[in-house]
Image (cartoon, rainbow, N blue to C red; front, top):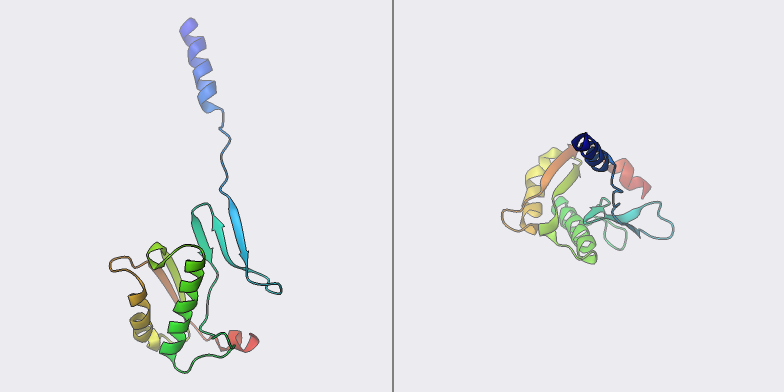
Length: 135
């Protein structure tokens, strides 16, 4: 009988849920009038908001490659501001208006990452002109 009681006590101690520790969440607001954060850190993971190739003056650079480069530079600056680099990126989502530009985009995109450290990636094609007209 002593063994049965000890076993039950051990089982109840093992089954009792431990208090999980919740990761710290840190928000990096985009600005006083922006309804989103440019980044959110949850524990050791940083989630970045999307970026488009608009220059600081609010204009798009001329040409697809220049716009892609400006986008990558903005993402790189957001990474650097959080103490990260391109080798820390593990997932990217790319929205591109015309998939005919996919090879040109890859030519700009790939050199930003250390050799052998390309992140997982999803790509969606579509017309983003309506979005740009609202910004």
